[in-house]
Amino acid sequence: QSTTTMSLSYEEALETLQSMFSGYTPQQLDTLLRHHGGHMEHTVETMLAYVDRSPEEVLEKLKDLPAEGVGGGGDGGSGESADRRRVFDADEELARQLAAEEEQQQQHQH
Image (cartoon, rainbow, N blue to C red; front, side):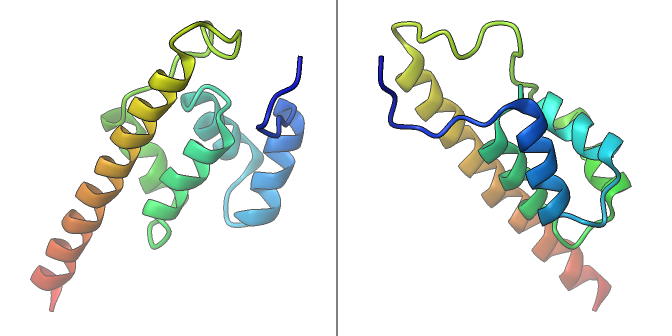
């Protein structure tokens, strides 16, 4: 059974996040990673969308973001790739929305 995606253990993903985002505590990174069901790419996309905000602000924003299920993922169900595409599309739309919000906030501050 071969797969084309690289799979990280939860601990490896957490270590990688710690090396990428040194301003976050391990507990904050754990919260973000768990919110995204252990999905590293989605976690990083969220963090990059809020790169100019404090970790506390990013964690506060999680309340507005849909949580990804931890219990049902990764077992290769028949609709998995379509589901991943939908999640990616939703993430992409969210990133655009967040960028627009940030731009509006910056315009109001100047």
